[in-house]
Amino acid sequence: MAGFDKRVNSYQEALAGLEDGMTVLAGGFGLCGIPENLIAEIKRKGTRDLTVVSNNCGVDGFGLGLLLEDRQIRKIVASYVGENALFEQLLLSGELEVELTPQGTLAEKMRAGGAGIPAFFTATGYGTAVAEGKEVREFNGRPHILEPAITGDFAIVKGWKADRYGNVIYRHTARNFNPLAATAGKITVVEVEEIVEPGTLEPGQIHTPGIYVDRLICGQFEKRIEQRTLRA
Image (cartoon, rainbow, N blue to C red; front, side, top):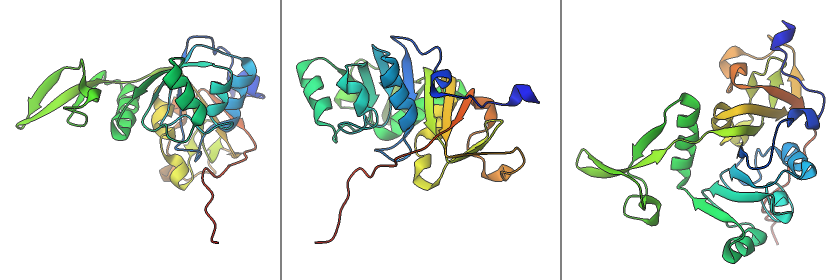
């Protein structure tokens, strides 16, 4: 069963083949459940001209925000971008192309991509700038816009536990966009906190089956808090 072992020995091996101009799907929500070490490896590699699809673009100096520092991202497809001053600066200066997408629509675009569905109709965004240039059809008396699915050259994902065959469990809210991204990458790379032997994980608890996972690595994580609020 050695051929089913998805483990790699280094982050360099985990992201081998990632090249300039590719599309990267990144799991996470804010700083919760982000593949922080894989992002750091992209920064180290210096890969440029990337299109990144993620709920948001990290914060200044951490998460996907690291890739903005060296202008490695050409375009970001996201639903929320409010925690990053550098992001705002690059957007206003025209150095960064931004495609804002309603959050549920973004999730469904990745889910559809992973399911092999090329596009779908949704009422969300009709009558707003989101709908500009998109086909409109009426269903049950309500107009809907056509949204194309999303797939990527690479998907980078953060899990909690996995077995060496690549079956992954996410922990609580860190699940967020990770299982959606995992299905929609041509090459899906998952970093986890613990790798266990096959048979250890309860089959009914597995969120991402190993069939979707190409490479698996165990890492150490900072798990930074995005906004720390304390009592006076």
